[in-house]
Length: 221
Image (cartoon, rainbow, N blue to C red):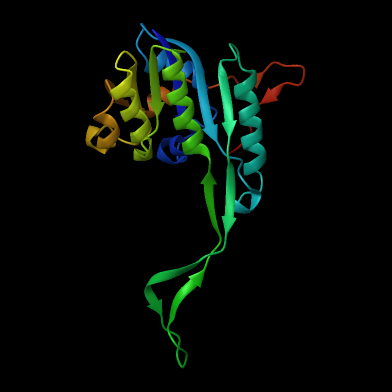
């Protein structure tokens, strides 16, 4: 069964990877060898993310580590991982506090200005690519790795208009409680499962990826 896997990078990271030791993740091996059944032939893993800005993190090396990882995904045989990048938009809105801050002799502080970063384009890029592949007959099965209910519309359209396309859902969430999977997505999938830390542990890239300029796993994350 010709399968294309669609990975929401930030949903995967914040849902499961962030607090794990398995960030050096081989996405192709993960799905072909450990998540999908033997009937599935992964013809491509499409990974959607946005560049980390240095000012987003307390660690200035975060951006560099992300670039190294993305290059490792591109170079790792069999080179079936494609990466689509959106962008991070910065804004400085005023947000209302849940509990105003009282300062003696001064009016209560009810709002504060914050630095906010919003991921742009990823959801739209993923949804349109998934719909296009299904409509064009590029695959027999689409597998979504996300627990974001914003993907409901894309899955609903595939299910309604292309019933011959099988839909799989892999939720990157902690624990083994199926009730944590987005009901909106699960109800539209032919099958679903939770991505576990064991899957991640068994699907790590090699410490060094041979290339004209070898790519090395970062010493820390």
